[in-house]
Amino acid sequence: MNKRWRLGWVCAVFAMAVGAANAQTAQTGQISLSVDLTDAPRKIIHASERMAVRPGPLTLVYPKWIPGEHGPTGPIDGMAGFFITANGQPLKWERDPVEMYAYHITVPQGVTQLEMKMDFLATAAPTGFSAGASTSANLALLSWNEIVVYPDGSNASNVMVMPEITVPQGWQFGTALEADSASPQITTKTKFKTVSLEQLVDSPVLAGRYFKEVPLAPEISPKHYLDMAGDGPEDIELSQEHIDDFNRLVRETGALYRSRHYGAYHFLVTLSDQVAHFGLEHHQSSDDRVGEKTFIDENLFALNGHLLPHEFTHSWNGKYRRPAGLATSNYQQPMIGDLLWVYEGLTEYLGNVLAVRCGIWSPQQYRERVAEMAADLDNRPGRTWRDLQDTTRDAQILYDAGGGWDNWRRSVDFYDEGELLWLDVDTTIRQKTDDKKSLNDFVAKFYGLGGDTPPKVVPYTFDDVVAGLNDVVANNWAAFLRERLDSNSPHAPLGGIEAGGYKLTYAATPNAWESMVETANGTINFWYSLGLRIGATGAVADVLKGSIADKTGFGPGMHVVAVNSRAFTPTILRAAVRDAKGEGPAIQLIVENTGYYRIVTLNYHDGERDPVLVRAAGTPDRLSDILRPMAK
Picture 1 (cartoon, rainbow, N blue to C red):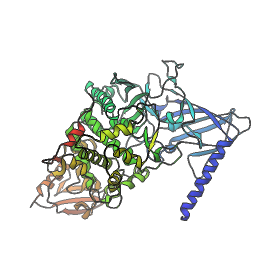
Picture 2 (cartoon, one colour):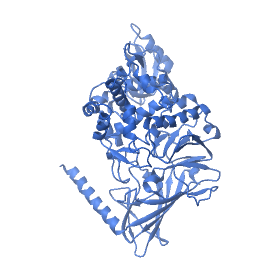
Picture 3 (spheres, rainbow, N blue to C red):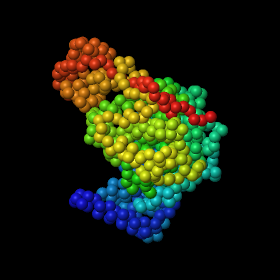
Picture 4 (cartoon, helix red, strand yellow):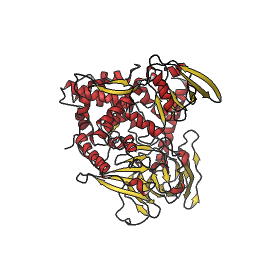
């Protein structure tokens, strides 16, 4: 072993020993946790916590590895005002010099309870993709892991918590937590039934002044609810047509998974441009944060159409059945993401298929999206050095990478490439069984294990996945999966598209899905022609390695100032690409890079190229069969 690894190993052993000693010396009991959201509009959340203890050394920890976030993302940088008292007297704490999420104290003799106060600063930027607490003037999304500490070494399922919240006057809220029967029904303060810390962290609260709860598929038990909070009353006025889409989503999941593993389910949808957009799965709810007009703008509704089906699918795939490396006992234990191609990849596939089956997307929109996704992955040079398996193991780093040259670095590709992989699995099952069986059969058995159950975790391994597939149809599934996971082929796995009855090609006609994306985010896609993604003002967002733009010296952050002697606009650049086709003139650009200018000549003559799926003559249209609704 090398010196660095040995040092880490010694520290880990020492930390485990200290944790065990703490648990033995200063045992703790039930926790009372009270959260005050009345200052949430000012982006401050107040919490007070009481914990039964015994005298002696004690280490308290702030949750670090948050389920579903796949990394040590506990937002400790938002923690402030952390005070501990015992019998009314201040108690000094000391942060661990190595583990920043740990606080050491000594509980004095005669003390049986600690009182703690802390604030959480909900100041996450309203841009990007952040899991931090989100608040605006009229709403707040509370994630309990942001305002709690617990004894180091504890099993989260054994730490019992009595939670309560206080919301601003006139606000309402939704959550999977059950109110204590003794709690008043009309009040700003609500006490919930005692739950484990595991269940508490898994049960966020969405509160707001403009709040609406819509029961979904009321004939189905357990019950399902769409809980919406918006910045204004118009944002939560969802049409009956879209309510019917979500009604069908509940019914389609029943037909697909043939089981439910929750007492009730709440879609917690934050409709706001004032908070970071995010999606996070929970066992009995989902935290879905989208733009304020998402439910009343048809393009935004379509662009975000996969979010609720995706997070809902995680109740089965990720919460109930969970990769063994992610099924940790508490929030300090590191997670191993090797099976994220199942956890997220299969969820991406099933969630997107469900979006079509329930009517959120049309089959044509699905095909356009798959064409764009497949083409992007097929033009990703980073796959020649980083395989798909490594993107799962390195997820905790890649989630925060982003930015330019992403096609060379690769990112969390196990979502989209995982979708292609599982489409390949689905069509392979259909081929081998003459279309008598499909991935639906695997899903029903693997995720319906045990029938309807209360929330619990049933871990699985790679071998369990292989065994489950072999239970549907015999095949060398281990080799099938490893070939795709470990490949450094420059091309994406397109076998599922081809076996589904289609082929990926390129046309001069814009891909309608990509056009909708361009309109929403203001970035124009010349990816499959020049190798550029450019903003509406000429800012270069990214460059495809190996493309003509790369070979002529383009880099992210540069600006295209002019095209063929005219001031840059996306329309003028598109016209130049069209005019250059065949024997047309080369494209001349003036490019600015950190205050310096140069002329760039692009000898590109293949015209516009946008990805599209076309039917392969003489093949069965399995993709249409896959997208067909299952519910009666």
